[in-house]
Length: 152
Image 1 (spheres, rainbow, N blue to C red):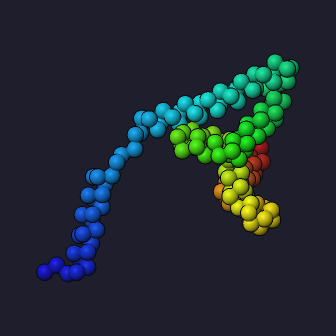
Image 2 (image 1 turned 120 degrees about the horizontal axis):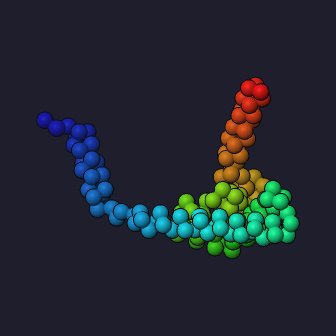
Image 3 (image 1 turned 45 degrees about the horizontal axis):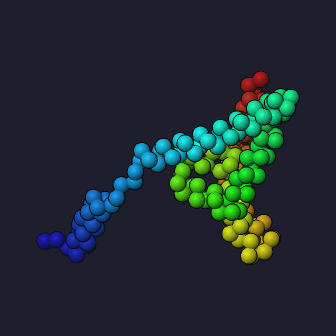
């Protein structure tokens, strides 16, 4: 005899199997291609800017500052216009190239909560997404630095 609980469990399993079967599959090749192209283009822009600043007689190390600043500005600017989010919808992971994606992850919550004021809105919510990345990144850097210091 099948109990009501077992029947309910069976119905849920059947439903999930049917749902998986009928659920449209994402176009993987298209998504991977978009991510690759967009991420690559962001990196090409960074390389173009680096080459430009090295032609102005800056070393590659010295060019890193202005290049990073320009990429962060562009990402923040396009996030403010709502264009970076549209790019993220199409490109997926390709739009999260470290520096531009990080700038986007700070600007987006700041814009979303600006109506709550600059302190409790923008200031408090700006690092909701980027905060854990900063915490674990800094903690890992300190740990690796300590291990390196001990080994030398």
